Length: 307
Image 1: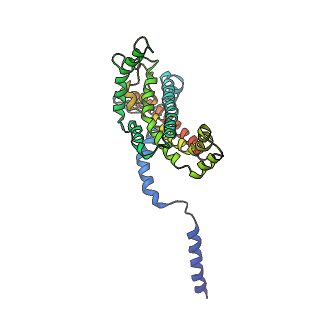
Image 2: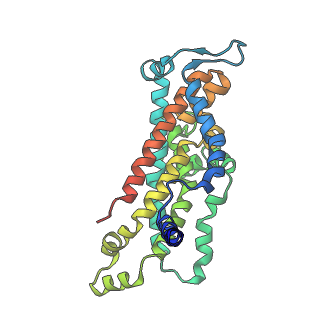
């Protein structure tokens, strides 16, 4: 009798266990191990190094200085704040302008026939050009003497003398940001084109029945469907712009002065030119915290109900 009851209880227990969601999936252990080595260890090392004074060239071991690097960063380093401001202008200026232009292009070619497929491919071309090629292309275009931009502006009478696009603090950041916008427009164009293609046809047809046309169709019907695509694509580009080093370094090397020095360029100068690894790590930690805050804000906005 007891054995029979035990046999009936086993399937019930198995069914209850089968219906439960395990709190931890052991299959992800290999991935967690790789992430711990590739991402976790460098992050922890950077945080530890940010509390030390360490110059590998000097031959002296690292010395613990507590939070002095962070105090220097916040209170006695004007270059850090200038680099932070340049990073904000470069990052958000590029994302705002490139996303708007990408949206406009996606709306303009949305209803083109298949005969114009080559035009769509042509609009994606800047995204396929290597970063270094883009940097040198814009560098030659915006040269003070001999650049095509100054030549055209002089011919049409917009300017009376050549503009120092890359050698003056007034225009250098604008020029570098313009080059970055040119490379990012195709990305937003591609994302918004895919999002527009995913709008249900029934919704668009119902809006047309209600006599929704032109700008009202875009703002009231299509834009709500593009919200998620914009948030995801802009988050990707914000992170990419924060980490963009090659384009700025190839065009201006952060100059003239510090007018185009962003956080990534400043960290490079501190770590690999000044060999001040402790202070460079402190800026890197602040840089990481800022990116995490932006990511959290974007994810929460993406999860929010559009209604």
